[in-house]
Length: 302
Image 1: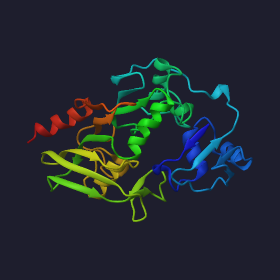
Image 2 (image 1 turned 90 degrees about the vertical axis):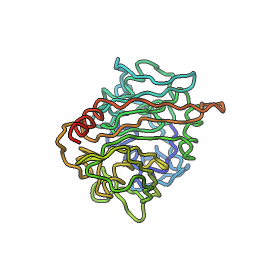
Image 3 (image 1 turned 30 degrees about the vertical axis):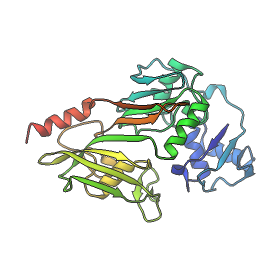
Image 4 (image 1 turned 180 degrees about the horizontal axis):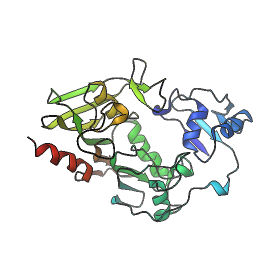
């Protein structure tokens, strides 16, 4: 298996990255493979503590363990768009995009394998079949899926060049003061809490365009366009400005008066070029039930 490290993987330890990419293997087992030179970086052996760089070629040469393969599951899929090379699905809140060490069932990949079998790209390994980009578990909305490796590369190039337009809708805590704002703050991993990201001077350049769509007494409805696509970018940017996404307990929002499954955040719009053509595809979905529940609460109290 060959994996090319992306910009979001830069400066992550090799063993930590592979533990995420190959959740079927324990961290200690991965470290053993690295020490035995079963895993190479750009053709050379490295230590488990090696810090990845964007573009690194990670070559994994270990025997597959059949009993650890991900199982297809008959989980309904909301397919918004499909052609011979790709599809776009509407992932519900509460569903993981792909399996992890702790959870190997009820993910989007399990559902994709049941419906499409081997007709999914495998560039990122079996546990991420077809996956081009991710949404957090409790973020709902549109995700592009590649049916083959050539379309995966075609679409991944658009993501890398920031030509895919991704828009989100969210409810923020408090009253955001500006109607529009370009948020340009570097984002990197939190050294004290590796599962979180933070604004930091040595982080990756990160840009979000925020537009207010409605204001309430205690909250603000916004649309957000991602210019870059860092991990947790919207959640980090809005939290840093003291207006975290409503109910985003990981980034300081606390629990609001309206109970929801964590953050009220939805990827509702995608624009991209259809693989192997010049055709532009634009997709937009309606607000999900979580967003509508919170919106209705605040609208009724205006």
